[in-house]
Length: 393
Ligand code: GAF
Image 1 (cartoon, rainbow, N blue to C red):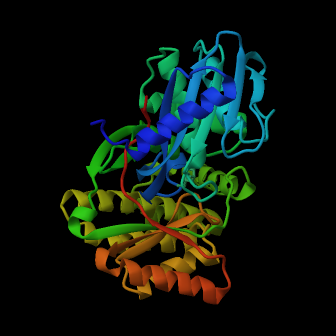
Image 2: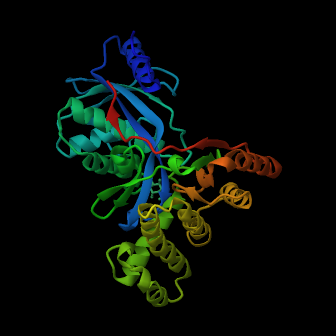
Image 3: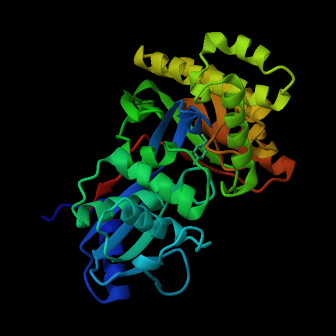
């Protein structure tokens, strides 16, 4: 008897079939790259600091065929209309304000780095919620980068693809983001969180099996959309860079936790910079605490560290919003072990660490709190640490 089709195999087959219906030929292959949740380590990546994301089961899938004639055709099942057709030798940073800037930017970054990418036909589908702080952009970039890496035999490793995708996002799209999301999508492993040092991209896979310990991690999507090409993300980044310059260090990563008081003193009346510096320095230390708690087999104990992280993002970094704060406050009152916003902020999603038995009551409490506040109903789902980018067929 034929083996039953898994959901992943079915989606790969459907994406392949849709490609064929669209372009009239078979794709050369099908690839997937996931969105991510960041467990801890927020706004530390562009400060050369520590982060700890894990991959979601939600993926962007790309069916891709290589072309030799300089033409790049891009199509997404989520966008009405036919493929967008571009020429690889005409790709220019800043020229595209649409979703196609992400995959086109990856082709531009690969070519600019000297890799022979001579065109492609691409068809995409995705289950990564967009604008939810779960890295739909990185999933889109990484899946295209991985496909081209395979098809053009470039031999690049996950972290190298991540760097090129970040360059596409920073330079081609114009969003001044760090390296966390692309590395998470490219390098995470199922059942693990990725402890990443963003200074040199050294990594450690930390076993993160909450279900095996009777725990759950919920993602609560506020449905408040955010975008990093907007000014607030860039302002925080510029403020951190100002802090590093005033303190005479290359990056805020270089301010040790036990040197924080002296650094704040040195910053004098630069109140805003002081708050940003305090967040980054304490957040790096929180990542290290979470790593050591997980490695010592005490996952429940990370809850208060996550909650501390939220307070720091809300009060010092000032990137939370009423919906995110309501999730955190409601979850904690309803017995959660810890909760925090995740991702870039100004909307997007929060995470809630909870005992498995408390999931229904917590979900209900959050939904009711949103209804009473008159907010759009949130989307709640369980996050299972899943695999990073891979070829499906
Ligand atoms: C966004 C960015 F893309 C990341 O690089 C990171 O800075 C994050 O916000 C905040 O931790 O997801």
